[in-house]
Length: 324
Image (cartoon, rainbow, N blue to C red):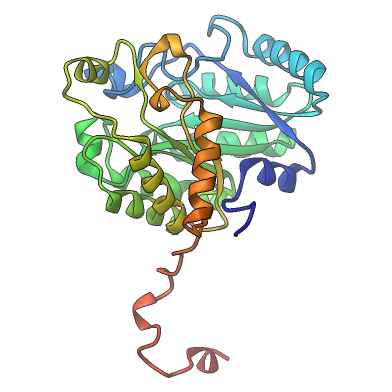
């Protein structure tokens, strides 16, 4: 994966999967997170969550999708769409209610996929069975988005994530038999995380077989614990050069079969105290791609740690001859 294609872009994944360009339609539901009901939620999460571009949760699923679909269809001549349940924990509700919301989206015209954002500790077999039934009944694809953020469980505790690594592993193993796509969210420059943590996070999600990864640069949303820490000088997001190095290492250890949906976070300026070092995400992306090229770096460059890497070059036995 060199030259122009130094990482597996999400747009290429969508074209490969659906044969055309596909657009996401954000949907807000009147929900919250289990973490927020106990200790106020993650230190980086604001009251708005992450659904900055979606319509109010008081609007029906059908209305939200139809309004966004018609707008994007006129603007981009789009034909296929993903109903994206982005904000908060979209499996944190009674099962019957979950099915109603998902059914409403699955029945919407030209929706080919349901993307459900949730937490690793909110994946249960009963909810997966509901999604499997809807997928078969409505001929829609299912993608479950899991917020892992980092493989460093000490950092997960520090940011009050409310779960550890085992919950993520359990969620991935439970999802796998259904054949659903998965998208893992990570933040590469959380306070306390090292370059080694970036590497181990890439290795973990590669071994567990996530389909997609959405990479976030840390932003400081207003009204959060991190906003207070940042304002008081107790939190340093680091330099963009440091983030480039973290992102480069992460991609090098990431399986080349995993599509990368995003490299940098996006948040409205009015909602943040800090985001992307005061630079637009597309300019940062151009700079980072130049950095990859100058470093002769690309996704999967160091992806050689699976299938008994410690045996390679040590023994001369040809195992393939004995497997016949």
